[in-house]
Image 1 (cartoon, rainbow over the protein chains, first blue to last red):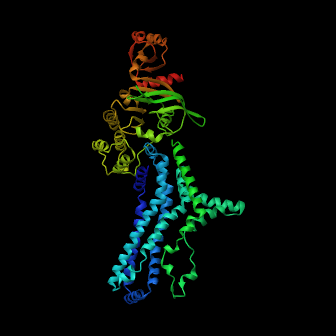
Image 2 (cartoon, each protein chain N blue to C red):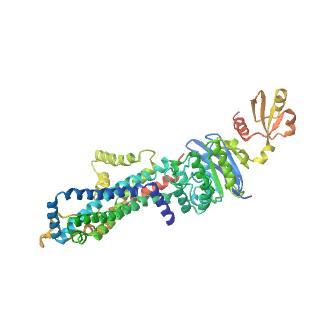
Image 3 (tube, chains in turn cyan, brown):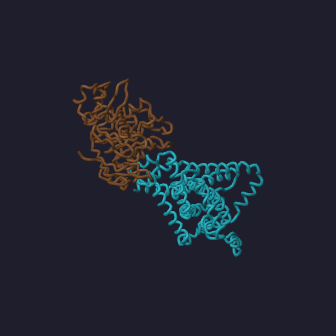
Length: 304
Length: 285
């Protein structure tokens, strides 16, 4: 069972090379932007010197907060990319094999429909985000190295300015939690996409997204409520995973510096709230129902 | 002989259409069974039921298993090549072999590599880069490398040129068939497989209209070429089918002894294709 799952997931990586090529491209583009940024600002020699002096003399918390913000921007871009990948992957997962008629070949092997569909679900909720996470770590390190080299050339102390202050493990631990938790939060949508890709005869993208807009509109017309809109869109953008940001507390007035937890991404994560959220568990149930339906369709529908 | 496939009263309905209508038959181990039928006769539906790809009514047992409910177990010991079950175009040959080795307990990697080494199919090629003939070679090599008890072929050579078709059946007999394994095959190009079949089954409008061994075919059926008075005399024996051939009458008889017909003209065993036409058209007349 488990070795079959590994083979099936590896098969998904062969077929959907975007799972690792897309984050690779993001990593390269962002590193390239770092390099062009360095070339551009190097022209302003005097200002660069002042900035380095400023950064060197800034407080540790300030430096941590600044680097944490930059690391988090990098992370967010990968997270967005992974989410787009997850949408397109799960819409394609059970559709492409029917379009290219290879489904009967796959079904001629001693692998059950449940094993196949579950391998595709695991690829979407586990493999794609964890691959993105690995690229986040590599990109963070690569860019820190690029900026260290630049700082050294400019006469700055990279060890002091960057490395001693970069909250790498804090940021990575938080990113890993986000990479595991967010797909769970979004899993009802992923289940829906898999279900659409299992039944639709054409344009899975359209079939998946059209009802997500039409049904809330009809609901609004008929009953003036917006339950579907809230369930789909408001839910998506408000995961119970993060603590709210209290703007008045960013600056710690007692010690006259930036509040310590501003420098920590991990401090923003509220795992207890996430795990105790009924909405999250309900979402998992919805995902399970859609996945079961997708297995059922793959097993019982006659493809001829 | 052990029976590998047993069907009793198998039916499959699509809405108002009865695609397979109360069919019963057996396939014994070590046989090469040809399933012949016109388009829409229910061949593919019957094969799908055997392969557990579709549910059906009646009693159907393949290798002692219920194909639809025990499909995973069944697929360890069954292989199939169907015109519609195409290999994925994005996959590399080497990836395909690795995947087979990882998921199929009866697949032999070394055997597959050896079989492929006799073809032009390179391990690093993608399926989309191969010609249709090469894809079929690849598919047959994979199937042959599986130690399976039953091989089901549904129009395996559709769209291939004559060289590939001859080679396909040659390889099938030389590499796959060993007297222990069993093959069930459907095709329109019945002339090409006639000589390799041991058993034959005709299906028309969802019903089996002939189920016999090739050996007993000659005893049951004869085709007479006769003209003039002889043709009229022969007609009194009740031919199941009659057609014109170069001014003569070609008549197919079922269960009429050859001694009775011998004096009336040229006698021979009808080809499978002629017999098929006789059975289908004769039943319609």
